[in-house]
Amino acid sequence: MARLSVIILNWNGKQHLDGCLESLALQSFRDFETVLFDNGSTDGSAEYVRERFPWVRLVAVPQNLGFAGGNNRAFDECQGEFIVTLNNDTKVSPDFLSELVAAAEADPKIGMVAAKMLNFYQPGRIDSAGVKVAANGMGYNVGVGETDVGQYDTPTEVFGPCAGAALYRRAMLDEVGFFDDDFFAYYEDLDLAWRGRLAGWRAVSAPGAVVLHVHSATSGKMSPFTVYHVHRNKWFVLVKNWPASLLGRHLFRILCFDLGALALAVLRHRAGAALRARWDVVRSLPLLLQKRKEVAALRRLTPPELAALLQPANSAVATFARKARE
Image (cartoon, rainbow, N blue to C red; front, side, top):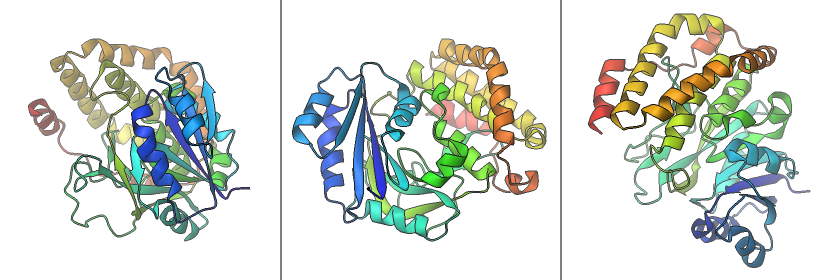
């Protein structure tokens, strides 16, 4: 039985598969299996993998189950003690897996490990060195857009990993569950990180696990699809996971940032997607409140301990002005 299972989700990403799978084949860590889950591709991806990469276990379904649903189905096929989620539009360094495993083995309470993701087209620019949560309710990629000068090369505690290149300990997933199918795409990794942290699991970075990533290759930057799921799922995370004391303390700031996000969507001609997202949050409240009870049962950390994990938020007005100029 393989010690580690790599899950690669694919949806019409045939053009990325050579780079991703060939880099996996060169890993210094050898005790792993690869499960490629094809989410109803129509570009011949499944046939291509079956013919060119026979060592990959291919699971193909006729419809797109989303990032969350696809990974959950693939997880059912996995045997490993550790589960690595990896985007199809990536190339990984030869020590990618060994660095992730070494970081996890440092402490049995480490349930999540974040890789160091760099921009595929500008390898000197950081895509993600982990995920952080701010007091405005938003999740952010650590270091995104920054020039890589080694500022994130020391392993450190993070709130959670970006699921585009992350390791999860199976023992943690057995306790808190994997991704929430209802998210479909976006923020599902932050939701999982919240559940893990609430249950007392740690998350750390592994800067030696380097990944080149073509950001938004599948969904498109600021498409209506992206706007809808980001705006909706941010509220899904808040309602499901934030303790009442934290929500009460930061609600005004959260609402100010949400108003700014809605205004930006209007400026970018995405008002319909943004409004539909909020309406669907309201419609989903009964289900979200039931999930909130289930998440609360996992909680091991106190509200002050959770509050210490939040990062300060910038001014909502300044953030809106900066993004409006982008």
